[in-house]
Length: 58
Image (tube, rainbow, N blue to C red; front, side, top):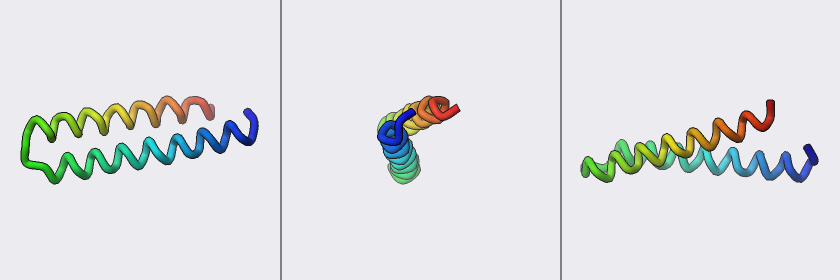
């Protein structure tokens, strides 16, 4: 893997982690059950993306 590819992967990991954290945080703060479920689902999707990117490093 080239240094540029590693930098891209690092940036992508950071963004996925940030999005997962924000969605989880917002999900915990909202009262609307539909919105809470949607945000929880998005948090899980971002966690899955993060995990997929981590696998590229192995």
